[in-house]
Amino acid sequence: MTWLYGSPLPMWDQWYQAGFFKDYANGRMTWSDFFVSHNEHRMFASRVLDVVVLWANGRWEPLVQMTVNAFVHAAFACGLALYLWDFFGRKNAWLICALLMVFFALPYWGENAIWGPNSLYYFTDIFGIVALVELGFGKTASWRWWLGFCAAILGLFTTASGLLAPLSAGAIILLRAIKNHRLEKERLISFIVCVLVVGLGLSLTVRQQVNDPLQAHNFVQFSKALTRNLSWPFYNAPGMPCVIGLPLAWLLAVYFRPNFAQPRAAEFLLGMALWSALQSATIAYGRANYGDVVPQSRYSEFFNVLVIAAIFAAILIVQLQERHRFPGAIFALVYIGIVIYGLCNMSQIVVEDLLAPTRMWNLVAEERVQRYMAGGNASDFLERPSVRPDPQLALSVLQDKDLQRVLPAICLPPASAVTGRLWPLSQWLQEHSLAILSGGLILFVGLCGFGLARGKLGLTALDPIGILALLACLAALGFVWSKHTVTRNSVEYQLQEEIAANFKGAGNLQRAAIHEQKAEALKQFAN
Image (cartoon, one colour):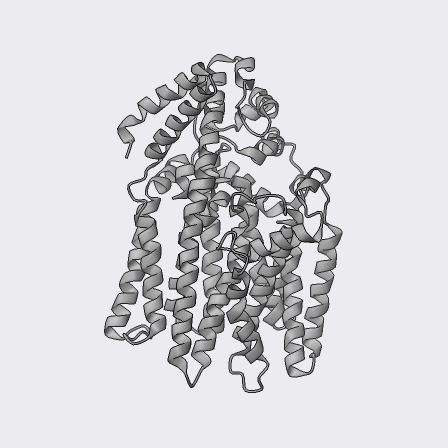
């Protein structure tokens, strides 16, 4: 449902990307352009994706970028599922898919979908999980080990925290050495490689003084931000890190038992948890003073990995128990039920307090751009509120003759506005996204129900974990289906009404009338 809140107009940081696309349009792009820092990040992978999409589409269209981002997000979900199958066994494939489906179907991560450049968070996840597994578990110099090494290097050119994956892989190797009381030569090589990659990552870090106000300036600010991050998906619930971390602490304690049966699976989950916790700590330092009022949706791609690891830690503990298995399953049932409630609640907060206001601001910006492209009145365009963050920057982009070759249709004069080659497919997928998602959720509900009724897929009617999977599917389906009457037009009608009311309240009757007319045109779509 995040497509309801996407904008055909570049958003915020995307305006700063215009120079990158201008070099492409002029044929002056060089490889160094892909590695130039943006904020603290070197967004090589995201820029490669942007150029590929621009080449395939023929134009720079944020809504097409949004569609592509959804596929990249799904790629990470599939990759994580494959790795969990590997460590837990294919017999648990149904459970893995059912639980991951809840995490990747709900829209708490919607900010990353609607912002084209935010594919860098997806790439951090993808390269991070590959580096974590293949360097931490792969046989040195095997093709999978080299895959992990390449992923670790590429991860350095996503977000600034890309170096945390090889750091976590090295921690897995040390944890295994502590348990076995020895560090094998083969693992020592992998450990040294992890250290070297982390060192390379540190050498590539960039400081942006403009972001200094967002950083933690003392330990109190850092600890408060870290607690908030580790509490995810329970916003402003300081005690939740202890609850979320309980299965992981339990797993770490039993891992050191001599007869522990699943050390690889435990190491994988603990490595995931460490990676996510380090991400939370990094964000707590770098963005302690950002997102205090509204949840930081963009970083949920990192926060949710800790919760996923905790859930599967609880399941692993239950599966390894020979005695008292049923009480342990009840604990897992209650624990995961609490997490699912948190995910649904966080999704509601993100939609209402972040995505909807973002769309409202973008509608104001779109009106300014459309009016300017139709009439060419720059002073009218600069009248605030206008395009964020800098109307002057946006105006310079709109006036650039070279950029007009690739600008979105909304940024062109009405007579010459054209869409790209991929736009029809992107539009169809967006319009049918809810039906596609609901169909997948219904399929999982049907499979889990069939398994419980017939004892198939490793499910039995008396299996609390099987019941949990069914409830998780139903919870996600219920949340998604509760929004089935919401359409893009109905959302925009309500927001245009609110914008008009805000302008009236500010005494700007001319701007109010513009948005009242837009609302009237959408009135037929009101819920």
